[in-house]
Figure 1 (tube, rainbow, N blue to C red):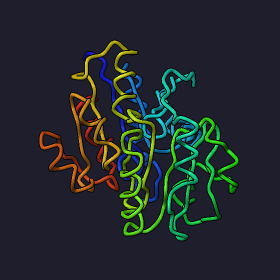
Figure 2: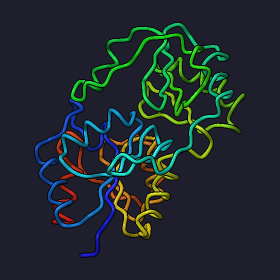
Figure 3: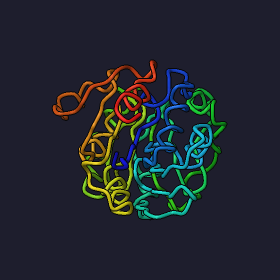
Figure 4: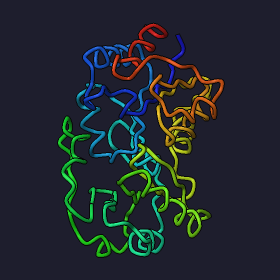
Length: 265
């Protein structure tokens, strides 16, 4: 079989309900690599966080991180980046009317920064040990920022999204990775644009790419891939926005691994 590129989101797609890897997933991905297929992980998570998931998978894989702001090769070489302009990042951090119950977060090239302690956010990263640093975000001066994101109740984020779009929509890409996580990257920084860069790097057509996702930040990636798949627990909007997509099982039942095993092994 001609080598395929398999690219998958993590939370609520490849990972189970505890944000961990099912043993079947590990076994399947190692078998896919042994057969010569290309692997990639595409997530809103920070690259340092994703590297630990890759280590647990025990495979070589490209990493699309920060919703497509960065693409790293299996040897961790940075091969594509689209960070926020420093002045724009500073404005996103310091000029919005952010409710007190909403946490402001920043991914720089090396770290995850947050404006105040929020231990409940670490549950997503329990299996990797990746953690935030609390600090004065204005002191970062917008340098090396891949993503600014806001975590809080959806009703509070809806009002914040309205302000974001009114002031910055022409300059940024706005999406959600979860209902409580409103995320802002540079214009054109999407999983889809990073996937296009990866396909070009591998000299593969989009038809040779199998992509798996569940949420709004996966839309562009699924639109690029020739073989797009949604887990059954995906955001309802995606089923109508991507009517030709293949729907598979639930992420909690290792649906990505089961689909790949049936298709390619």
